Image (tube, rainbow, N blue to C red; front, top):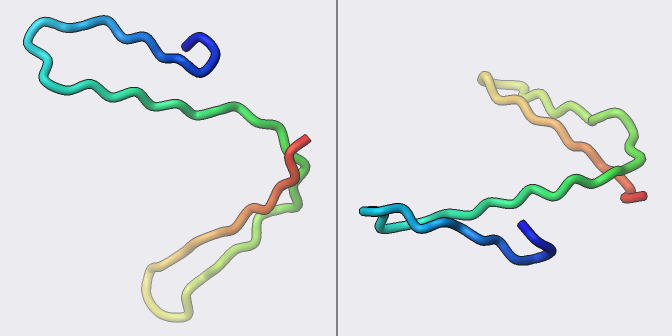
Amino acid sequence: MAGDVANITPVAGATQYQVVYFPEISVFADPPVEDKAERGPSYGWTLIGEEI
């Protein structure tokens, strides 16, 4: 990556390419809120943060 441009090197025989970018951010956040389902094995959480 250079700025907002990704350069990839061609690979012989390749038919598809994929570029994935995960930016690193810093946030202030409260502890996550858990969401436990009353029935079944379902579980989730929510995290709310303010970018700094």
